[in-house]
Length: 229
Image 1 (cartoon, rainbow, N blue to C red):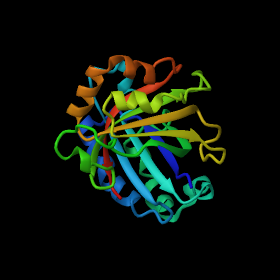
Image 2: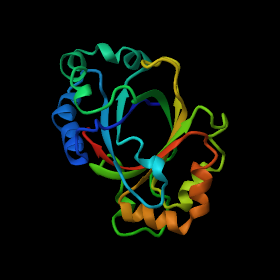
Image 3: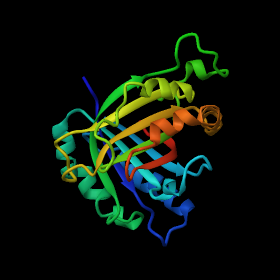
């Protein structure tokens, strides 16, 4: 069964320094968030700069990723007791609610780990997002004016060219707490380190361009993904 996941993409309040912003999101906000009763997984993705992406990479500085058992729990998550008691009134303390985006999705896993027989750096053959609390991800949010056939048959091959160890496409679902989806979809590519991403992107620039190009008003960002559970 496909896993359902909610993305919350956010903008830092300008009165906060980046350090204070990311610290506050981790704690106390993240500490409260991991106790939500219907939550089945929680990852905070913090934007990090790379000279391999354009200026739009800094449009958003946080991406919350929340997994649920079913679409009904996603649809009703804004009424969840812990969220109502602690999180809703705290959100405006650190993020600009007028610019944030939410999108509810189903995950389509294209590649779930390192390919068999690959010549990997030491330890990469043991890598998975479950056994590493920190990973590096490329998040590509496809804008509504992008192509409806954004999910291409050769996407998995392109991510392998880039040395990504995992590749997931996320497709919008109908039951959506924020109204009609403002994005066509999301691509997620994983590496164990920033250096691994950079090495892959420099070795296969055409593959990177093919994956993230021609997507309308999209946002592509590199993040440090921090798995709470």
